Every structure is written in structure tokens, then in C-alpha cells.
Image 1 (cartoon, rainbow, N blue to C red):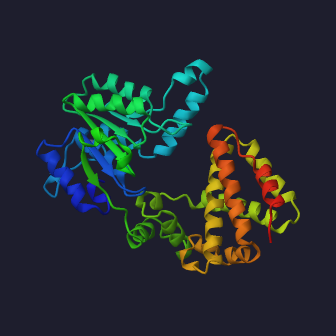
Image 2: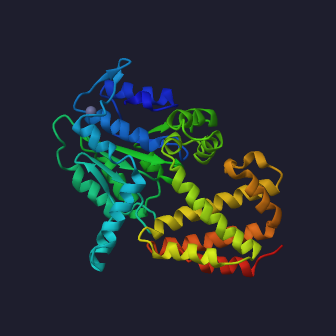
Image 3: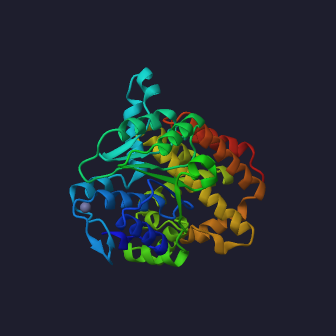
Length: 368
Ligand SMILES: [Zn+2]
């Protein structure tokens, strides 16, 4: 454990640790970088370093122990998607009036508050920033900082103005970390009050090495699959759920194939029924959608004569066969259909995907 687990971006990490050692960490930081560059992982490491009860030093610089009470609690927020899903489930269970007032916030440690974009609009809202303001007036545990991590840069206007006020008059023990894929989305006045730290995504070989180390039991094509799907995100690659992905992908291919080849639909109906019935139907539907996108994109790469770009390398033959029977127009139609299903799901977050409607739509527009 500790900063040696953070791969890549050595200079940026060292700079942050030097500032912590000197007690000169700016009260607001922007971690800027593409998805997978490690913004969130690094933010949680900084939070642990500031609040670790052991305060170890490695390579002459501040680190975190990973095993004290604070480190363990903060690390529980590492699986952000899972924490958000839990908190959404709680909100869904509330009365209608309370539901409207309740914003998604993630807190696994009393001194660390994580603010993700609030569904369904996926924006950071005024209610969330108000919670931050209220909490930043409370004292942290002795010697600790109160750490606020905003996981995206898309704020609603009121929320951004409100955050700006906090940054203008920060309390001495508050530490703000804003994560941004595109820092230009943040108001210039917010940017000017924070120090920018740029993070580069890992290259393919670095990701591949991490996957091989974490999953020596996988076949070489499976390791390549995980590394390619990660697009630079080492954490994603290491914790890639091979079983769940291949199951979702098998269903996605069944869906695409049965509409493409117009054959017996009983298997398709059985599959879509399973998606409707299950309590985890929403998450499963999203996984299927994502897998279907990837399969269609790979089919386009093959049709385009660029098979080296294919990510689902473990099923290359099957993809080539599908690409052989599908026309460009059909693939484009299928992508458009998926977009429609996905935006429908975003509006009705917990309603399961209407896979039959999607299949019917595709079949009607099938062009060979
Ligand atoms: Zn610790």
C-alpha cells in the first residue's frame, strides 16, 4: 500500500507529496486528466495521507499506512460506482417529497465527503454544495483535514457560484479536490482559485503489465481484452470483472445476431425476459448496452479494414462473421438504436431496458 501503488505520473505525485511535507498544499486542487488517468485514485490517496493516523514516510516523503482506521474507511469509497448505486437505492426508497430534496453524497469517513454528479441530470447541484458548506464549518478530528472531492467538473450554475464563494473564503482545515476531464468546463474564477495538477493516462504496455500481474490465470487474449477496454485506466483493468463482462457480451451478441439474421427468436425472448424480471435488471441492462456498443464498434473496425483496433480480441472470429453479414447502414442503425435506449434509461433511471423494442426496431430497419 501507499503511493508506490500509483503507477505513472511520478512527477505530479511527487510534487503533491512535497507540498504536503512543507505544509503548503493549496487549499483547492484541480486534478485534470482523461478518464482512467487516476484522478480519483490519487484524490483518495491524498485524503488518506492528510488524515492517516500513522503518517508514514517513504522515499523521504509523506505517505499513508493503508491499515489505520482512517485509511481503511476512506478506501471504502474506492469503488465509487458501487457507493453511488447504494446511495441511489436509498433515495429511491424515500417518499416522493424527500426524494426530490435528497442529493447523492458519498461519505465513508467523517472527514472525507465525496460529491459525484447527481442523477438523472448528472450535474453537481446546489443542494450538494450546500451540504459541503455546512460540513466545512465543523471541526475535523484533531490533526485531520476535512477533504471534499468533487468527482466531475459539470456544475449547475448556482452550484458553481456557491462553490466559488467557499473557495474565496476557505476554512483553514478544508481541502478541496476537483476532478476534471475537461477543466475548461469549470468557471475561470474557480480555476484561478485552485492549483492545477495534470495527469496523463497510462500507455497500453503499462496497463497490460498491471493486468498480467493481477490476473495471471487469464488467457493471453483475455488479458489483452481487459487492457484494451481499460483505455489507460489501470485501476479499471486490474479490477475488471471478466465473468460479468463476457456474460453481458454474450447476451449482446445474441441480441444483435438474432435481429441481424432474423432467425428463431425464442432464445432472444427468454433472454430479454430475464433482464426484465431481475432486481438487478437496470445494472445488467447497462452492462449489456455497453457491451453491445463495443461489439458494434469492433464490427465497424473490421468492416473498415482496421481489425488491429478491435478490443474484443478473444472473439475475433465471431466478430468477423457478424461483420461479414451486417452492412454499414445496419451497424449505424444499431448504434442509433442503442443511443435511443440509453437516453430513455437515463430519463427513467430504474426502469429496465426495453430490449424487445430495440430488437424490433432493428429488425424493421435491417438493411443487408
Ligand atoms: Zn493510515
